[in-house]
Length: 166
Image (cartoon, rainbow, N blue to C red; front, side):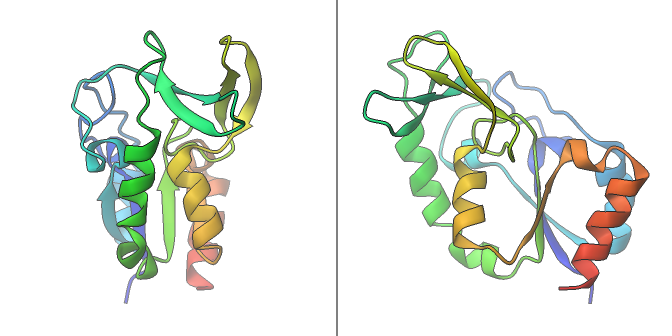
């Protein structure tokens, strides 16, 4: 049986990004299905956010909590919606062997998402998105990577080898 891999839907060509676009990645779309069963997901649309929608970014609030807030309107806060959706995904994640996240995303970034403070000053460039952080904590046995790690053949081979060890 092929390993089961969750994939950020925008990487599969689904127009779910905040701007109504997708960012399809050729290897993920064309080659990965030969080796794995693909299960698309999108935390933002799963949480009920529209397409298109206002862009959000990660902000360390004055309360020290990480929030997903509107870039242009910081009163827009979708943090709770993302957390609530994530909590509904435990059953789906238990049957997966790995996940491919979209880099730099406020929900899916895997150590690549910028983090800002309340005054919009950049604090870090290597933070995890809200859903990715929850997955890492809740499901430490999953093989995780992002689209950038799969651009070159070496990263693709490494990901597939890790899946085969599961």
